[in-house]
Structures are given as structure tokens and as C-alpha cells.
Length: 133
Image (cartoon, rainbow, N blue to C red; front, side):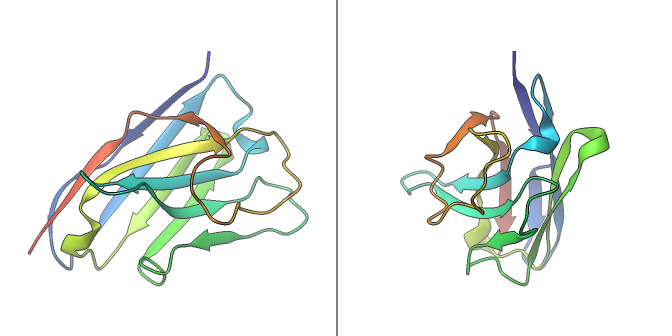
């Protein structure tokens, strides 16, 4: 049984930082692309960032324009953990944040574009991030 658990959310003032973590079990963590998504009430889900599986022919990451230069995605395969370092937070970053694994092990493509979540099968319950102005 696959389990995915996010943590690290909270309340922070604008300009501050938060670090989110996502720990998974029940799957080959290092064999999947992983991504962070967010969804605020009344808004569509937004793909925030993605990182390809370790050993992919084209190592890389993807960031939405809205977070580029402020957020950093990383992974620690030894700990089965995905991270999202969020700096210079803005009130517009307020949302529920989810991590998810791509449905296909050793997917040959890069991070899906658009990063809309439709190719991701294993999701956590989310962690709330609130940025006050």
C-alpha cells in the first residue's frame, strides 16, 4: 500500500520561508518523477514544481513561472523524501500543497507539460501554507 505524507506547512509572514517535506512508502521512491501541486479554495490545481527520477537521461527540474527563483525542489532517495524550499513567500502562495508521484516508474519523458497532475497517481493529503501580508 502506497502512503504519501506531506508536512511542514504553517503560517508565515510575507517574505518569509517554509520548507515542505513529503515522505513516501510502499513504492520505489527513486523510480518516479515527483511533483508539488497546490490548490486554493475556488481555484484550479496548479503544478508548482517537478523533479525527474534519479538516473533519468535528462536530469532536471521544472518550476511554474509563479515560483521560479523563489522555490527549490529536491529529493533524498535514501530517506524516500521530497522537499520544497519556499523563500520570499507571498500572500498569493497561500494554498494547500500536495506532493505526488508520477504513475509510471522510470518514465522516459521529462516532467509532464502542462504539469496538471493528470499523470500523477500517488497523492498525499496535503499541508496548508498560509502567508499573511
